[in-house]
Length: 180
Image (cartoon, rainbow, N blue to C red):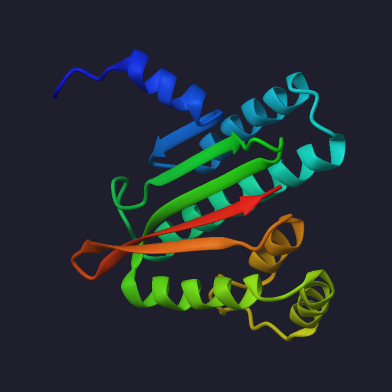
């Protein structure tokens, strides 16, 4: 393995105002530990309580979705890994981004769903949330792209952005960006 330029990486993180970055296999306990670190950072950063709750909620939703997807697809540690970044932009908003490997067809469907949600205003997102709540759900239904994604869109101050990049072997890397 080549030597990593940690100083250069640190400078890159500082320029990008990256507060938290994680890349690797994600477990329930790791989601919780990183979540606790995020909460502490937001407190130290004097984040407005409602913003802090939204950032934390979006982080939890995205990382749990990644973990559930990896488990549902029987992905091993490497394929089930997550990449998560929480940063600040120049206006002071928090940016929560998360990504993971997905089957290409699943990624395309999710990308389309995110694009649909990105086209809705706050009132339409609220109506979509209520409609999703009323939908009957069978016990064996697979979760995904439902209530949680709508909730992330509702918490976001800007339309959600998603990207899908081919990763080979019928898979792609899906990433999602929310601004809080």
